[in-house]
Image 1 (cartoon, one colour):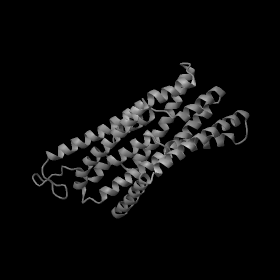
Image 2 (tube, rainbow, N blue to C red):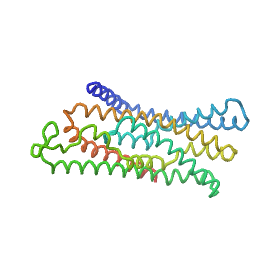
Image 3 (tube, helix red, strand yellow):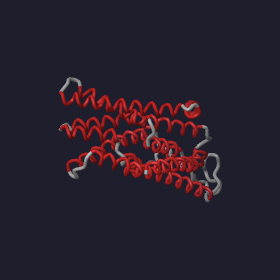
Image 4 (cartoon, rainbow, N blue to C red):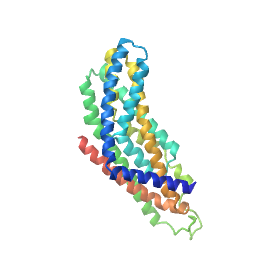
Length: 296
Protein backbone atom coordinates (compact mmCIF):
# COMPACT_ATOMS: atom_id res chain seq x y z
CA UNK A 1 0.00 0.00 0.00
CA UNK A 2 2.76 2.44 0.97
CA UNK A 3 4.79 1.67 -2.17
CA UNK A 4 1.70 2.10 -4.37
CA UNK A 5 1.04 5.54 -2.87
CA UNK A 6 4.63 6.59 -3.52
CA UNK A 7 4.50 5.57 -7.18
CA UNK A 8 1.11 7.23 -7.70
CA UNK A 9 2.44 10.43 -6.12
CA UNK A 10 5.50 10.32 -8.40
CA UNK A 11 3.30 9.93 -11.49
CA UNK A 12 1.07 12.83 -10.42
CA UNK A 13 4.05 15.05 -9.62
CA UNK A 14 5.69 14.32 -12.98
CA UNK A 15 2.40 14.98 -14.76
CA UNK A 16 1.99 18.36 -13.06
CA UNK A 17 5.60 19.28 -13.81
CA UNK A 18 5.15 18.39 -17.49
CA UNK A 19 1.95 20.46 -17.59
CA UNK A 20 3.78 23.62 -16.52
CA UNK A 21 7.09 23.04 -18.31
CA UNK A 22 5.46 22.43 -21.69
CA UNK A 23 3.07 25.37 -21.42
CA UNK A 24 0.10 23.01 -21.53
CA UNK A 25 -1.39 24.78 -18.51
CA UNK A 26 -1.75 27.97 -20.58
CA UNK A 27 -3.37 26.02 -23.40
CA UNK A 28 -5.73 24.42 -20.88
CA UNK A 29 -6.63 27.86 -19.53
CA UNK A 30 -7.53 29.26 -22.97
CA UNK A 31 -9.41 26.07 -23.88
CA UNK A 32 -11.48 26.32 -20.70
CA UNK A 33 -12.31 29.99 -21.37
CA UNK A 34 -13.37 29.24 -24.96
CA UNK A 35 -15.56 26.31 -23.87
CA UNK A 36 -17.03 28.45 -21.11
CA UNK A 37 -18.06 31.15 -23.61
CA UNK A 38 -19.56 28.56 -25.98
CA UNK A 39 -21.48 26.97 -23.12
CA UNK A 40 -22.79 30.36 -22.01
CA UNK A 41 -24.12 30.94 -25.54
CA UNK A 42 -25.74 27.51 -25.37
CA UNK A 43 -27.35 28.46 -22.06
CA UNK A 44 -28.92 31.52 -23.69
CA UNK A 45 -30.42 29.27 -26.39
CA UNK A 46 -31.60 26.78 -23.77
CA UNK A 47 -33.36 29.56 -21.87
CA UNK A 48 -35.20 30.56 -25.04
CA UNK A 49 -36.21 26.93 -25.53
CA UNK A 50 -37.49 26.83 -21.94
CA UNK A 51 -39.55 29.96 -22.54
CA UNK A 52 -41.01 28.36 -25.68
CA UNK A 53 -41.84 25.17 -23.77
CA UNK A 54 -39.82 22.91 -26.06
CA UNK A 55 -39.60 19.24 -24.95
CA UNK A 56 -36.31 18.24 -23.34
CA UNK A 57 -35.34 21.87 -22.78
CA UNK A 58 -34.98 21.44 -19.00
CA UNK A 59 -32.63 18.46 -19.34
CA UNK A 60 -30.53 20.31 -21.91
CA UNK A 61 -30.44 23.39 -19.68
CA UNK A 62 -29.25 21.58 -16.55
CA UNK A 63 -26.71 19.60 -18.59
CA UNK A 64 -25.27 22.82 -20.00
CA UNK A 65 -25.18 24.30 -16.49
CA UNK A 66 -23.13 21.32 -15.29
CA UNK A 67 -20.78 21.72 -18.28
CA UNK A 68 -20.39 25.45 -17.58
CA UNK A 69 -19.46 24.70 -13.97
CA UNK A 70 -16.88 22.14 -15.12
CA UNK A 71 -15.23 24.50 -17.64
CA UNK A 72 -15.35 27.36 -15.15
CA UNK A 73 -13.51 25.27 -12.56
CA UNK A 74 -11.01 23.96 -15.14
CA UNK A 75 -9.74 27.50 -15.63
CA UNK A 76 -8.06 29.64 -12.97
CA UNK A 77 -10.04 29.54 -9.74
CA UNK A 78 -9.81 30.22 -6.05
CA UNK A 79 -11.45 26.96 -5.01
CA UNK A 80 -8.66 24.81 -6.47
CA UNK A 81 -5.98 26.89 -4.76
CA UNK A 82 -7.63 26.52 -1.37
CA UNK A 83 -8.68 22.87 -1.56
CA UNK A 84 -5.42 21.75 -3.15
CA UNK A 85 -3.27 23.75 -0.75
CA UNK A 86 -5.14 22.62 2.33
CA UNK A 87 -5.05 18.99 1.19
CA UNK A 88 -1.30 19.18 0.59
CA UNK A 89 -0.59 20.89 3.91
CA UNK A 90 -2.81 19.12 6.42
CA UNK A 91 -3.31 15.45 7.20
CA UNK A 92 -6.98 15.36 6.21
CA UNK A 93 -8.59 12.21 4.86
CA UNK A 94 -9.46 11.78 1.18
CA UNK A 95 -13.21 11.42 1.68
CA UNK A 96 -13.36 14.29 4.12
CA UNK A 97 -11.53 16.70 1.81
CA UNK A 98 -13.62 15.56 -1.17
CA UNK A 99 -16.74 16.25 0.89
CA UNK A 100 -15.44 19.73 1.73
CA UNK A 101 -14.78 20.37 -1.97
CA UNK A 102 -18.34 19.32 -2.87
CA UNK A 103 -19.87 21.35 -0.04
CA UNK A 104 -17.85 24.43 -1.04
CA UNK A 105 -19.08 24.30 -4.63
CA UNK A 106 -22.72 23.87 -3.60
CA UNK A 107 -22.38 26.66 -1.03
CA UNK A 108 -21.02 28.91 -3.78
CA UNK A 109 -24.19 28.23 -5.79
CA UNK A 110 -26.27 29.01 -2.70
CA UNK A 111 -24.50 32.38 -2.34
CA UNK A 112 -25.47 33.26 -5.90
CA UNK A 113 -29.09 32.29 -5.22
CA UNK A 114 -29.24 34.42 -2.06
CA UNK A 115 -27.57 37.40 -3.77
CA UNK A 116 -29.93 37.37 -6.75
CA UNK A 117 -33.03 36.73 -4.64
CA UNK A 118 -32.20 39.55 -2.23
CA UNK A 119 -30.96 41.84 -5.01
CA UNK A 120 -34.06 41.55 -7.18
CA UNK A 121 -36.90 41.23 -4.68
CA UNK A 122 -35.59 43.11 -1.65
CA UNK A 123 -33.14 45.72 -2.97
CA UNK A 124 -34.30 46.20 -6.55
CA UNK A 125 -30.82 45.75 -8.03
CA UNK A 126 -30.17 45.09 -11.70
CA UNK A 127 -27.80 42.64 -13.36
CA UNK A 128 -24.86 45.06 -13.57
CA UNK A 129 -25.09 45.93 -9.87
CA UNK A 130 -25.05 42.28 -8.78
CA UNK A 131 -22.31 41.09 -11.13
CA UNK A 132 -20.27 44.17 -10.26
CA UNK A 133 -20.61 43.36 -6.57
CA UNK A 134 -19.50 39.78 -7.21
CA UNK A 135 -16.50 40.74 -9.35
CA UNK A 136 -15.33 43.92 -7.65
CA UNK A 137 -16.06 43.16 -3.98
CA UNK A 138 -16.59 39.46 -3.37
CA UNK A 139 -13.78 38.24 -5.65
CA UNK A 140 -10.93 40.15 -3.95
CA UNK A 141 -12.47 39.43 -0.55
CA UNK A 142 -12.50 35.71 -1.30
CA UNK A 143 -8.86 35.73 -2.40
CA UNK A 144 -7.94 37.75 0.69
CA UNK A 145 -9.65 35.17 2.93
CA UNK A 146 -7.79 32.36 1.16
CA UNK A 147 -4.52 34.25 1.69
CA UNK A 148 -5.40 34.43 5.40
CA UNK A 149 -5.98 30.66 5.41
CA UNK A 150 -2.52 30.26 3.87
CA UNK A 151 -1.00 32.46 6.58
CA UNK A 152 -2.88 30.45 9.20
CA UNK A 153 -1.38 27.22 7.81
CA UNK A 154 2.08 28.81 7.83
CA UNK A 155 1.57 29.95 11.43
CA UNK A 156 0.49 26.44 12.45
CA UNK A 157 3.60 25.03 10.80
CA UNK A 158 5.85 27.57 12.50
CA UNK A 159 4.26 26.88 15.87
CA UNK A 160 4.67 23.15 15.30
CA UNK A 161 8.36 23.55 14.49
CA UNK A 162 8.96 25.75 17.54
CA UNK A 163 7.05 23.36 19.75
CA UNK A 164 9.09 20.39 18.58
CA UNK A 165 12.32 22.23 19.32
CA UNK A 166 11.23 22.54 22.94
CA UNK A 167 10.23 18.89 23.43
CA UNK A 168 12.39 16.04 24.64
CA UNK A 169 14.40 13.95 22.19
CA UNK A 170 12.27 11.15 20.73
CA UNK A 171 13.23 7.75 19.45
CA UNK A 172 12.34 6.27 16.09
CA UNK A 173 8.94 5.12 17.36
CA UNK A 174 8.10 8.61 18.68
CA UNK A 175 8.71 7.64 22.34
CA UNK A 176 10.55 10.25 24.38
CA UNK A 177 13.98 8.99 25.48
CA UNK A 178 13.70 10.98 28.72
CA UNK A 179 10.20 10.34 30.05
CA UNK A 180 9.04 7.36 27.97
CA UNK A 181 5.91 9.09 26.69
CA UNK A 182 4.90 9.81 23.08
CA UNK A 183 4.93 13.53 22.36
CA UNK A 184 4.23 13.26 18.62
CA UNK A 185 0.74 12.30 17.40
CA UNK A 186 0.54 9.20 15.25
CA UNK A 187 -0.67 9.18 11.65
CA UNK A 188 -4.24 8.20 12.60
CA UNK A 189 -4.51 11.11 15.02
CA UNK A 190 -3.16 13.53 12.44
CA UNK A 191 -5.68 12.34 9.84
CA UNK A 192 -8.52 13.39 12.17
CA UNK A 193 -7.10 16.88 12.73
CA UNK A 194 -9.75 18.71 10.72
CA UNK A 195 -12.36 20.38 12.93
CA UNK A 196 -15.72 21.84 11.98
CA UNK A 197 -14.12 25.27 12.40
CA UNK A 198 -11.67 24.37 9.62
CA UNK A 199 -14.52 23.12 7.42
CA UNK A 200 -16.51 26.33 7.92
CA UNK A 201 -13.41 28.40 7.16
CA UNK A 202 -12.71 26.55 3.90
CA UNK A 203 -16.32 26.54 2.72
CA UNK A 204 -16.81 30.21 3.59
CA UNK A 205 -13.67 31.35 1.78
CA UNK A 206 -14.87 29.67 -1.44
CA UNK A 207 -18.60 30.33 -1.14
CA UNK A 208 -18.32 34.08 -0.55
CA UNK A 209 -17.54 34.62 -4.24
CA UNK A 210 -20.58 33.54 -6.34
CA UNK A 211 -20.07 32.26 -9.86
CA UNK A 212 -20.81 34.86 -12.55
CA UNK A 213 -22.44 32.21 -14.72
CA UNK A 214 -24.83 31.28 -11.91
CA UNK A 215 -25.73 34.96 -11.45
CA UNK A 216 -26.40 35.18 -15.20
CA UNK A 217 -28.91 32.34 -15.33
CA UNK A 218 -30.54 33.24 -12.00
CA UNK A 219 -31.19 36.83 -13.07
CA UNK A 220 -32.58 35.77 -16.45
CA UNK A 221 -34.80 33.04 -15.03
CA UNK A 222 -36.09 35.44 -12.36
CA UNK A 223 -37.04 37.92 -15.08
CA UNK A 224 -38.72 35.09 -17.02
CA UNK A 225 -40.72 33.98 -13.98
CA UNK A 226 -38.99 30.56 -13.75
CA UNK A 227 -36.59 31.27 -10.90
CA UNK A 228 -36.91 27.70 -9.55
CA UNK A 229 -35.38 26.41 -12.79
CA UNK A 230 -32.55 28.90 -12.35
CA UNK A 231 -31.97 27.56 -8.84
CA UNK A 232 -31.72 24.03 -10.23
CA UNK A 233 -29.29 25.28 -12.86
CA UNK A 234 -27.13 27.03 -10.24
CA UNK A 235 -26.80 23.82 -8.24
CA UNK A 236 -26.02 21.90 -11.45
CA UNK A 237 -23.19 24.41 -12.03
CA UNK A 238 -22.03 23.76 -8.49
CA UNK A 239 -21.86 20.04 -9.19
CA UNK A 240 -19.90 20.72 -12.37
CA UNK A 241 -17.43 22.82 -10.41
CA UNK A 242 -17.22 20.13 -7.75
CA UNK A 243 -16.22 17.53 -10.35
CA UNK A 244 -12.95 19.46 -10.78
CA UNK A 245 -12.34 20.50 -7.17
CA UNK A 246 -12.91 16.94 -5.94
CA UNK A 247 -10.31 15.75 -8.47
CA UNK A 248 -7.91 18.40 -7.11
CA UNK A 249 -8.62 17.17 -3.58
CA UNK A 250 -7.83 13.58 -4.59
CA UNK A 251 -4.59 14.64 -6.28
CA UNK A 252 -3.50 16.75 -3.29
CA UNK A 253 -4.15 13.99 -0.76
CA UNK A 254 -2.45 11.38 -2.96
CA UNK A 255 0.66 13.53 -3.43
CA UNK A 256 0.88 14.29 0.27
CA UNK A 257 0.31 10.72 1.41
CA UNK A 258 2.74 9.41 -1.19
CA UNK A 259 5.41 11.76 0.14
CA UNK A 260 4.70 10.91 3.78
CA UNK A 261 4.49 7.17 3.07
CA UNK A 262 8.23 7.09 2.44
CA UNK A 263 8.95 8.34 5.97
CA UNK A 264 9.83 5.79 8.69
CA UNK A 265 6.98 5.86 11.19
CA UNK A 266 4.69 8.32 12.95
CA UNK A 267 7.50 10.34 14.53
CA UNK A 268 9.00 11.20 11.14
CA UNK A 269 5.54 12.12 9.81
CA UNK A 270 4.98 14.37 12.81
CA UNK A 271 8.31 16.09 12.10
CA UNK A 272 7.45 16.58 8.42
CA UNK A 273 3.92 17.86 9.02
CA UNK A 274 4.89 21.35 10.30
CA UNK A 275 7.25 21.81 7.36
CA UNK A 276 4.45 20.93 4.94
CA UNK A 277 2.06 23.36 6.59
CA UNK A 278 4.64 26.14 6.62
CA UNK A 279 5.75 25.70 2.99
CA UNK A 280 2.32 25.13 1.42
CA UNK A 281 0.76 27.84 3.58
CA UNK A 282 3.23 30.42 2.30
CA UNK A 283 2.61 29.35 -1.32
CA UNK A 284 -1.18 29.62 -0.89
CA UNK A 285 -0.84 33.02 0.80
CA UNK A 286 1.39 34.37 -1.98
CA UNK A 287 -0.80 33.07 -4.82
CA UNK A 288 -4.08 34.21 -3.27
CA UNK A 289 -2.63 37.55 -2.18
CA UNK A 290 -1.40 38.23 -5.72
CA UNK A 291 -4.81 37.33 -7.18
CA UNK A 292 -6.55 39.53 -4.61
CA UNK A 293 -4.43 42.52 -5.70
CA UNK A 294 -5.17 41.79 -9.37
CA UNK A 295 -8.91 41.64 -8.64
CA UNK A 296 -8.94 45.08 -7.01
